Length: 364
Image (cartoon, rainbow, N blue to C red; front, side, top):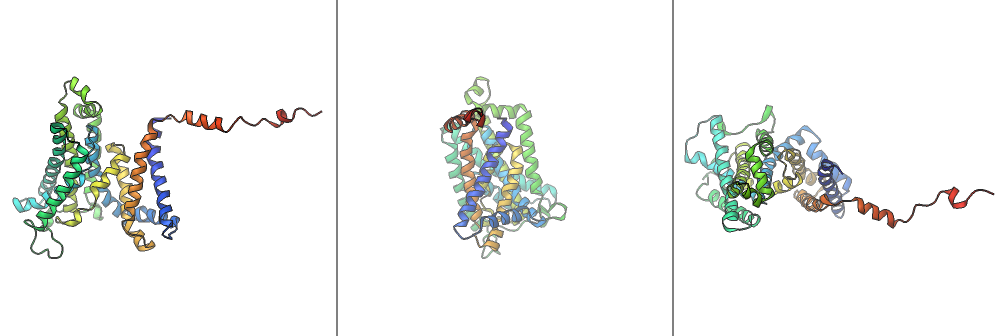
């Protein structure tokens, strides 16, 4: 079976099966599955308003998915993008409190750079722990995410809190000149373009540059990379840092384009959803773009499910969880040769029935 057909068919089949199972679950709540699937489509892609919500949610998903995909190319399984994202947003909000920024595009770029540095340093720490102490990067990145969220809450509710934020602790609001606006007068901010360009850029880098090839060699076989004279440890840490930088930019964009300050709304689960997006895209930065749009649509449809069908807003998280399990399970089928399976099923059915002429013989 052609590789491209398998690469596309397995995740699409997993999503289709996830939708079927999700429809079966909601049927126990007395909701018609056909209504659920219809509302999901309408809430995600049914109108221009739906498309704007979908694309808004897709922008951070592209960047947090890169936080998983790039380290994966270096042989790491990073699942702590949520921590890098919130620290990136915190750095973006705190930078104007530390230094005076120009109220123009340069100031906005500096906000994103601050987010990238904070997120990159945080995830690079997981790479350093793996290379220096042999600590599993999956566990360390997840635990670091909880530490980052705790640090974020402490600073936002304490030293960096705006005294004017009473019911919802927040940092001071960014200057309007530093905010990231919408594209073409729409509600879709320029963060979508940043995410798409990042995906295209990292895809080209991994595919066509010597350093990108070195990252892929290290991810394929560290021992081979060392025999080739490649600095494996440095490349692993660099891959982790680049992934974390993408998640940090996602946090900075969310602050500068959506929330205008750092507050609890930034902890929205985009870092965890990015894990699912990356695995469905098989850690291919180019494939992350359409997958992020799809899952952005699922997230955008959550409120519509609640308003129209009475389902909880978080029910889409159940759908995402089912999809994640099925996508991981589908990887088992990727290297399975199905021809012997079909042949065995054919033998179990028994011999083909004989034709009428052979069964009854010639007429006398």
